[in-house]
Length: 76
Image (tube, rainbow, N blue to C red; front, side, top):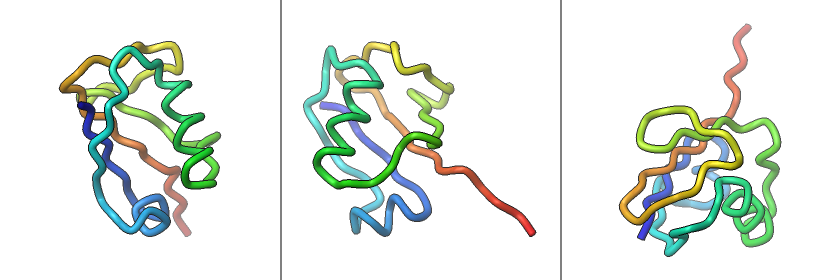
């Protein structure tokens, strides 16, 4: 199992701060595609961190990973 963490509007869209998902052997890109399909939100500009390090779309996920989806922050 992989733990998914969501912040800001993503957390509000899902209604949860975290999910558990069997996504072992998926790439970050495949995981993002699944989440877009399941929840319908846009992850195009969202940063992804795996185990507290930023990850690229080709990163392969392993059981026990913690994947955080971090939306862009705007200031004003």
